[in-house]
Amino acid sequence: MPSLGTAHTRWPVVAWIRLKLPPRPPPMTLMGPPAPLDPPLEILQRNPVATDPRRQVYAFEEDRGDWVLRLVWDMEDPDVLEAEYRSPMWGGRLPKERVPEFWQAVKARVKELGPLPVDAADPRP
Image (cartoon, rainbow, N blue to C red; front, top):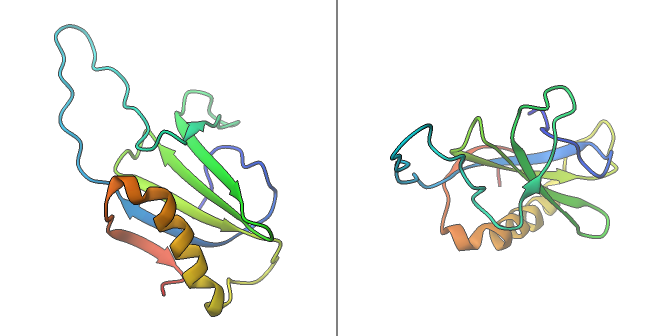
């Protein structure tokens, strides 16, 4: 899964989750184009994409000690919220015993959106 925007840490992504967001009501337009969508979480901040400044990507990073939780939402794919586990584990995958910790951290950050179905993940619990 390619990471979007510019991460604050250069650590590699060793695990990720793609969550399906609940459907939004259709935009109400009186005149002109509809207003741009708001990010699904208030903690998400604009995160420029160096190769395409027109892209609207929003991200949040939380230092969790020896790893970083990164949430990413791309306005071009507004139905998906991605979560990354970034850690200095080059050339490896997240050990199975650390997967529940990652999933719990993601659930804690997205709980205001309600239960979200998992679209894809690596690794799965």
